[in-house]
Length: 70
Image (cartoon, rainbow, N blue to C red; front, top):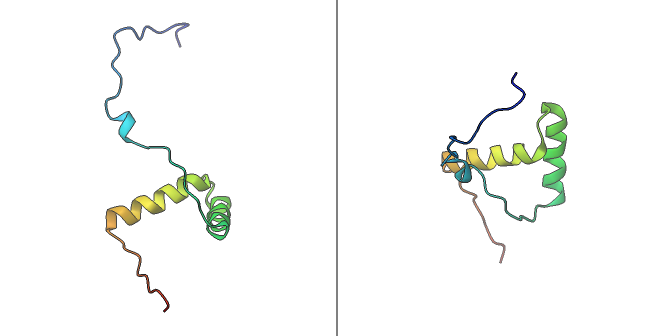
């Protein structure tokens, strides 16, 4: 490896800002516990698992079936 690298001619990745966006989300403690336990099994951080699940839902067009009790 070199001691120093010259990045003066480098270009920023134009797609990097579109990859992820930080948000605040209130998540039920049961859901967090579920993903934390899954994280222990898989070795992946639970935040990544939640993101992967939500991304899969978005790509597959999965929709939640809600029925409100009257």
